[in-house]
Image (cartoon, rainbow over all chains, first blue to last red; front, side, top):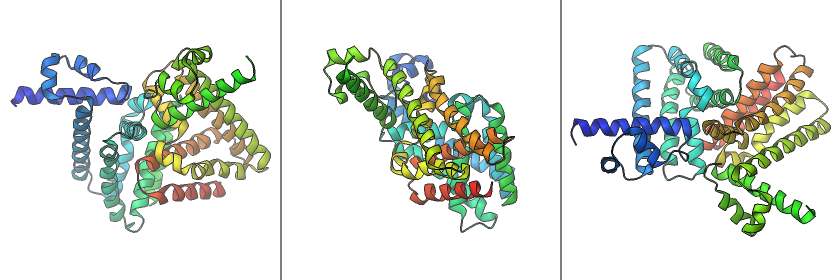
Length: 188
Length: 188
């Protein structure tokens, strides 16, 4: 497959990723994705045969993106405490999307888990990537023993903020909760 | 409508409520609900014409159930602190459902918000019922000024626990998080 084919494929995956996030996986049809991609149907089938194939590619892309982001953070922030704080800042940076659609990871996992989708574990494994990285940071701060629970605690807090921010009109809530988390990280 | 009709209607609402929770709203068809109810299609239409009509009735039932539960808790627990602790125990009591399907309120709101569903605000208002009740309890403990944020904090923490418990295989996580919340309530 040449460069044009690669670009088409990437474009389809990016469009599907957004649609799954904004509308939900079940509510996004194969046709919705093909139409949004603006690629003739016959060509489209060359890249993907089913919506599940697209989901699989979206999850692979998401895992790559997460790994890339985490490794960028390691470059950018030499200290574990700064890295943890930066993790919580994702919520602030994505506040407007979160207020509309919740967390892209949590909401997709919830949906696929209910569907008992064949790829539900692939989706849940996105949390594992964050957890492994968070465990390293908490360990670096001397919390080796509690690192798994601390990492799940932090991920859970962020998930809860995302759910409630998307169901509430209180704009201060997310900002204040992130401040609480930053304080919690400072005091560790 | 006689007693039999009322019972049929209640039965349909209960079945739809479960299906929406376990499979998701979008993935549950009108036909799924009619089939599960075991009521002849012609009769079924007598009660509900569309899936949205059923959702509206499910949300009304849920709000009634929440109000009833909160008023039962007020009877059962004379002290605000006990009431708040009892709120967190919902997670423990529903652990197996939460591990499979997340929180029935949070997951439905997330889905309907993404769908930009006409009833999304009716769904989000389930949180308002809890919030108003939690505000009363935090106020009774002398936290009038912070009561709104404390109530959102507590609801958010519980939402986060639900999302992560449903995406993780770590059974201790939920129990430990609820212990942390109880400790937090004790220290208020």
